[in-house]
Amino acid sequence: MATVEFDDVTKTYPDTTSNAVDHVSFSVERGALCILLGTSGSGKTTLLRMVNRLADPTSGVIRVDGVPTVEQDPIALRRRIGYVIQQVGLFPHLTVEENVRVVPSILGQKASETSSRVDELLALVGLEPAEYRKRYPRQLSGGQQQRVGLARALAADPELLLMDEPFGALDAITRGRLQDELQRIQRDTGKTILFVTHDVEEAFKLGTQVVVLDQGRLMQEGAPVDLLAHPANAFVGKLVGSANVLRQLEYLPASAAQEPGDSPGSQRISTHATLLEALLQLMQSRQSALTLEDGGQSVGQVTLSGISRVMMAARQMADDQAAEEAATDSQASENVPVTPEAV
Ligand code: ADP
Ligand code: MG
Image (cartoon, rainbow, N blue to C red; front, side, top):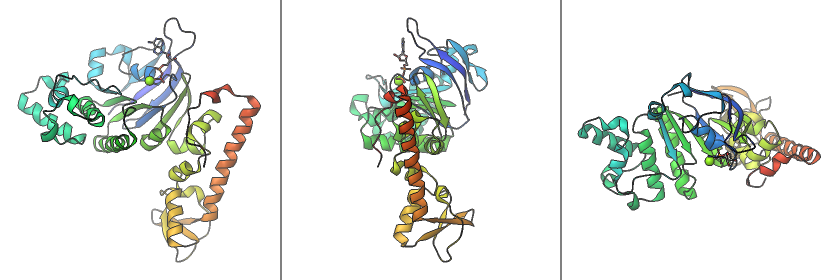
């Protein structure tokens, strides 16, 4: 597990007029799954590649476990950091087992030790070792290749994983499965992960921390629910879809609709449940209210009209932002990627 700090980091490529990364500062906690979210060209890949020194900042400092990257030997640094990209980059003439074994830090081990380690890694990423060990990359589906790529990145047991749109080329179902696997692996291993995506759904599903970038600048950083409930500006609001009722229901906690009072005999729901779970429970139980509880203690209630008020407020906020945007003719909004329309 590692920490990563970005301290006023700027990257300017030669012969370009604007900074690819522009004075970006934020910290990634140990064990976080931090998402870098932004449209194409917003500087996500550049930011990621500076962590393992595939590039260095023009100014500012990146620290991995407190030590500036530029003071660390690139090869030694990359050994401690797993790197997964969309074009998996498996060697076509090597078997799955050999592809995973090429990682330098396990090359020194005895063949018997390496074999059991490879099997362990294949099982970890959801590939039955006996079935897949001897296959060649061309005998695997895209999703399976990406699993092997992940196994290889995990082979040296790195403290930090960098992932650049790793599931971008996969179909929706396969992508969903790999997202589930990644969450499980992260829970089981506690690794710190920096994950690049332009997909808001993916960011919300996976991220414990989301960093929104636009034109190289950091727009907002926080937990997904913070971005949704308190977007820092119209750009973030539009990107994360503050006006999207479904997403609000799915990610906001039931406590967002908390009201005083209690309704004796009603079903109970935890403050940690989502608004969607509260809504479903209300409908299924045909009750007018649920008792909201925190650690077994009743703290109030949730009603249909309470949930509806939260939704209306979100709607209002989005309308206000749209009006503000129209008034200032903010150019940032032009770069917002397509997100599902507000419900
Ligand atoms: P993202 O990963 O968010 O799509 P990138 O980090 O790849 O963004 O690119 C950010 C900006 O830097 C873009 O404008 C891109 O054209 C520019 N850029 C990226 N790599 C280079 C390079 N090697 N030389 C010059 N410009 C580059
Ligand atoms: Mg990129």
